Image (cartoon, rainbow, N blue to C red; front, top):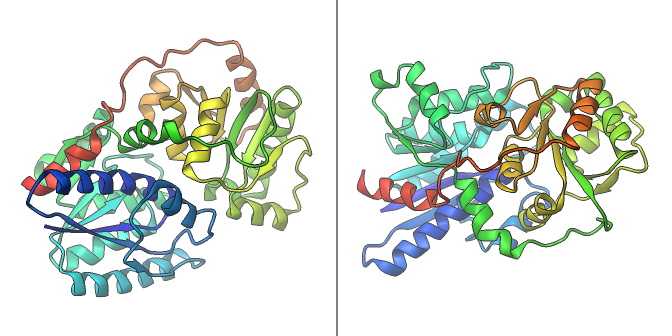
Length: 359
């Protein structure tokens, strides 16, 4: 059996590393050979955002690097669709495996489906119910044309049920979250990033277009971080996208915010393990905060991970400066419960591979 894995953005490298690990373990135990061809679209092209992951995590290097980045959504998705199609025609896989909700995800699924190649979507069924988010469009369309939908939570399964999954010719499977696999596997290799001083700190990440593309929102977020950092240090791995908009808008960052370069996954695990709290607009970091039992302030109006909000460990503030600061103040002395197993048992990678083999 041959699998073509399509990846392009940083979280997808981490998820793909787990399935690649499952493939390697399977091949070591069985005579039947499963081959995996990795296609990197190039969506994250900065060395700190891409190469470091393959080097740190021992992910097999991509057989194809399409080098597509720094384009608008239409041009980027169109070029990916064209180039992925050429790869699939050459490789003739049994499966195309896509992850998450990026342009790489929808392009890979579309290219495969038009060639009548089976598609499996990891992290299926997630919904923010905000159609202004490009990620929402990507995930909804990918779900609709996939053959197997690997759902991380019961919430995701229920979302698909409400959309009429029983009337669609695909298989829905609750797997748990593959990012929990990664957290468990790699936490022993966690590494302190350069530029982080000693002492207690809050971890913050900001990169989502709904925040960076608005001068008003980005200014409010950094104003809130400035007020928080007067009470507790804030460490901010600065995403290239966010950095460019800070410069464009002329936003003056508080000197006490500890800005560091984008980090690899092992450094991110160290930050999550050692921080006191997380302030983020990232989908993946919200879950990782939970894995490491850290309260999370999500600077968005909605989240795909609604079970975190319902569990009382994730708090939505949007870009509202006063709400961000007030939520931080409330959480400083609040005891939260992280004992519920919301995301499975950490063996998702094996379940995914077994389903692809037995389908």
